Image (cartoon, rainbow, N blue to C red):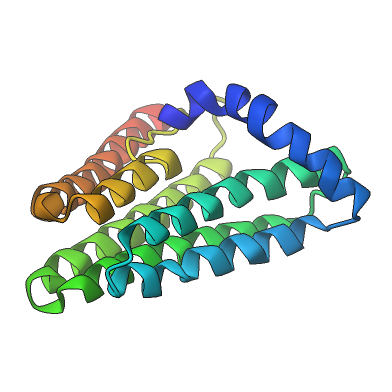
Length: 196
């Protein structure tokens, strides 16, 4: 949700200038996606070993590259179904990596909360996909509004806060889970009203 308001500014200032460089070196969008995934996976080590600031840098760099790959693909006309699927899978790998890193900080006290975060993310993604497929097959031609209380930008804000403010992990992780389930409930409610 937050990302929608700052996306254009962010891309104009931080993404567009770099796209020209990548095009000059003929770097492909999928290569950038793999780098984004690798940077995100690196957070497991950094967070788990107590290198909080390096973990945040790796996470934010991964998020930056995630914006860059899609923009590059559109700019050079190489938007593909494979690239889109690879990008989505990479996003999920990065999110899981961060939660795993947070878990490794203190497995005993964070085990259940980490499991709940993974579970709520999984259920949220699956429910959105199922609703999306069901809506595509429906005869009504209406606009279905996506509910995204905790989109990628919000998730990154939560993750950065959890990494840098470990004393607030309990509050932040519970909020993370609640927002996911709230989004699911509202999504189903909106979908049911739309198809009536």
